[in-house]
Length: 435
Image 1 (tube, rainbow, N blue to C red):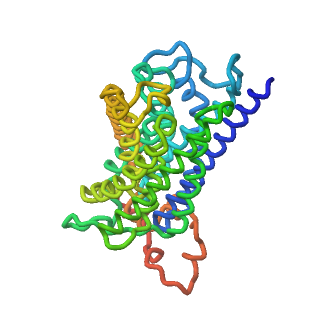
Image 2: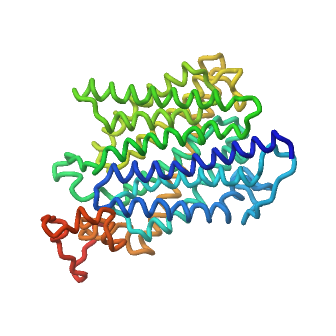
Image 3: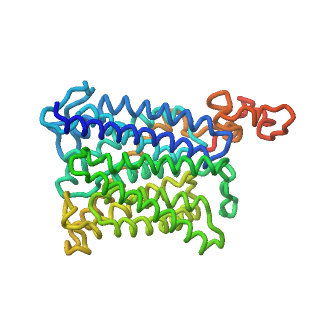
């Protein structure tokens, strides 16, 4: 074993560890952005759903993405991965497997943002299996596994489309079918703000995700020999910084006050947007991409709220709309020197060719992820007798109704504290459904 193989393998494994640690960021982000009565549920389902995604990825997901003897749609070998090492690689195949497994888990975590505070635990379990088997791996094969979009030169270095848009479109299907949370909208259509219970958790979650993104993007170089991972990391951090600043400024200008949520969403939007292009654009372009993402996410969130799509953790705006912008951005900014896949962008004399390929990839990937997720959820709704918990269970909170205990027991169980939520008596014979 030579030194380069060893160093590359360690680098890929370090990237995998950082991406897996992003699940911790999602726990804090999602829990902080929602109500206290659901915090323990959110933390627990994030861990078990990553476990489900890992097992499904081992059994069939990896084979569907990277299996040999495949076709334009999916791969057809390497199921039930045994840990073998492929000869001729410059890094450990097992390390690469863990790295890719971590990506699959992140896409599922994004999808589950559309389920927040109202879906049954059984729905999380079943959808985790189906999404990890039939939604994410198919799109990943098209772009990363030698599928038909790869043949057209689709640029998506670390997953603005594969990971983020795919998860966001599944979240869109879920949030439409589940309908808004109780109390989110008034009869006249105006929206109420259902405040998350801990903005500090949300901010810490964003910081953890920012750090984890170095594994996401820079780790996708799969090697250290030329030091290119440093350039990818630089672009990643600059875009995040630009998104944070533009998110703060746009909310300040429009609302008259700087909105912390928009600032945090702008940071994540910058990270999502640069994920496709981090290896293909210059540093100045990374800043532009992040700045635009921070502005887009502000208006996108307002649009979804206006059309009565209840998206508690802004998955549609942060991962969906920013993912679309990030994917299209390479069609403008990819340079001839850096475009190791596809062609240069419009601003570098490449014409509209690469932009057209990027647009094609966004449309077909988004439509596939949404349509298949919708079909799966509709079937699940019939088989599982609904996707959503009862009204009483939602009011009590999923901590108690699904798990029998609170994430913050002292906050809810003090005898001297009057809590109208706990005063609600649940009579099983009078349970109603919101569907």
